[in-house]
Image (cartoon, rainbow, N blue to C red; front, side, top):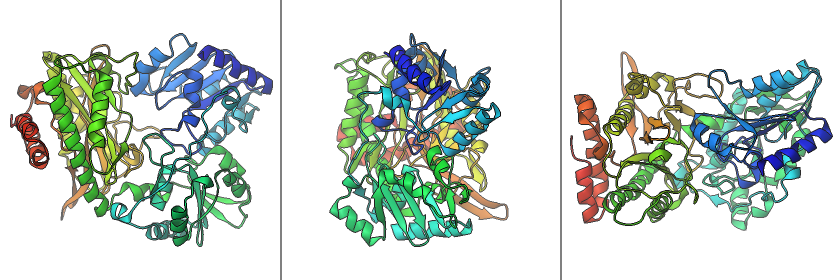
Length: 596
């Protein structure tokens, strides 16, 4: 099937004289995850992971993806003629490097200008111009060959109450306009679906697990225009928008709007987010201030209302997770259960919690060697039975009205090897050591990553993903600009200063291909500590309240301080969660939060 699709695509490329065609994982808004309509890269390659870029020439095809997906991609690309390019690995060219080396003199590079951001598009344009070639960016060739392509989503819009957000639209818009004025901008174009939803205090459902609305926004000193699919506007939504002086226009009309921006305007926009077609449609005489949307930092710093709500969300989530862990521990080997049925049961427990809106991403439930596939997705074909032995890795989360959760736990389902205990304990130590960092204001994610990796670097091992990412507030579960990562390269945000109110995951792991995988993930709120003559000190508040499986812990590996970290954490978990469980569940929790 993939071979046939590549053949059809090459036929369309040949008709237009296109030598190289790029198919990224992207929608028109540079979203991390995309709706069904936008899964063009999945369509053309067969690779189902959430990140990757396909580059097709008339003779060969490659897929670039990151370390989370090396194992999965290798399996899914088998027999497709598409070569896996492991991003960041020694000897592997970047996408841009490959294109620059491959494009012939006077050649033509093609892509849909709506799914390539402006900054990348301009780099590609400069590269092509050096070779005296041209760009073909005004057509979506995948759309031509994808005969049964799903339509654009038109999910309902929810007005998100200020009692959860802690701030109304008018105040948020006032802050944005202040930032525009500081930058000398008279018009701000927004394309990020997360930032638009956050700013307007609305949530939608146009991407699975990501409650956003397909739309654009244009903000001036006196107006705010929301470009969306107008058929989803209800009388209630219209009244809400009218009350906040927000007008609407059709979604697709945004492209005509930007063409008509007067030369007198100074436009603020982030070309790393706004797509190439929009950027290239703005008249050359219009001054553009290319900078990050002010809302990126605003939404990353949670206010006290949000933080209090987030704590409530994590309490609910912990109840579901503890009940799931109890069910696993008491029933494995006694009743039939598989990766999929266990995942479904956890979803049921989450949805039983008050104000649960949805999962925050598709649950990853990987048993034994499947746990070594970092973003494994069980299918009816790959689904395996859970046995009372070995390790089960479960990465999951939920959206509640009060906030979003993301948690990973690895469970010992029965006897585990000494090696498994050794690796599990190293992951636990990694997690706890990072969570207990105390630091001066001004530090960033780069400063902390070694605290998590040290137990593995000590034995010349490592995990091939970041240690932590920001969390959206009922938005994308992965949110910048804060993160924990040791490596600096374009696109990483680990160099951003951690501000009070930012929430970042703490999720070290280890993955031994073909054997097992382990990850432990909690969420940390950055808080202010003591301020003295040495400066402002900061610390992390741990808001994930679920036991770390003591059946897989080797206490002899841990220092007295590390044991104290784990014991104190488990004491907090028991105090907060036990009163919310049934009697037998609470008794079980007491055992699994005992001091070691």
